[in-house]
Length: 356
Image: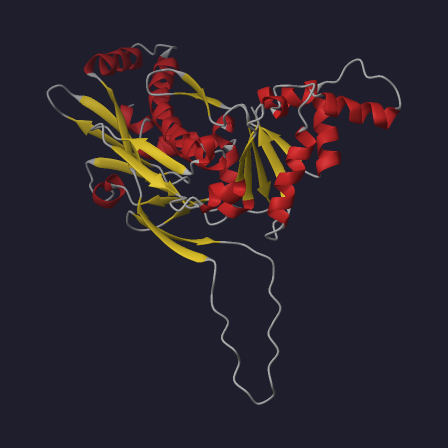
């Protein structure tokens, strides 16, 4: 058995598809489904949703009045490129050969370690995408932009709200200390949610979801306003309120389905970070918000027909290339790459509150 018989780009792709944990989608994929396009430029149409406008009256036998097409803005951006690789070195190859020749029962563990390298790269690719989607869903301080650092220390900034119109109409920061959700005795979280819903309703958007972290949800658990709702409903003093009770009441009172997003990742330096920030609540309308667009990577474009390189494209759009480098030294190299950027046609369907 050769290593190439069990470790190939196709085998990596099949493993990623069959692994139950890898089939669990990130939250952002529900709002930004994956799509593929040729090239690396992304052009998308930002629509400013609004209430329906009645047709103008017209006389019989007259030409129709041309209604101007308002509220659309074409945005063109070059999508960023991500690529990393890992290698199986000569020492690893020697260990595999020794295990094969001796029918070592731990051969599968050795191969599992190799597959884990590939899994790590593909997981890293998925993390990069989810970070972008969550940064758009809960932009820090209302600044709707993505900042991506490249390997050459160049920073690329993608500004989705260049004129500041989204921040002006769809972002609210609670600045009064007594009104912040971290002040349970005086905060009025249900009132804040109602303001956000009314703002979306004014442009014809029906608010459907409220995304937050557990820390932010706990503000609601401690909130006097929430506890008073329980007292009013039951007519009895409330000694204890837990998160599940609050989520049920929150949904009943606001009409919003709470989405608790505590998913975390490790940054490049190993620091653990959250995809969705604490102290923010994103009110989201029904339907998708845009698409996660994948472009054609150099591996896909130039190596797909190279017999020396084994290339597979995952369903997500990530390209996986496995090749043998005969050196010296001899190595097997696994590369994961993606050209990807979310579009945000439905950004006006999202209202964000910085609650503390």
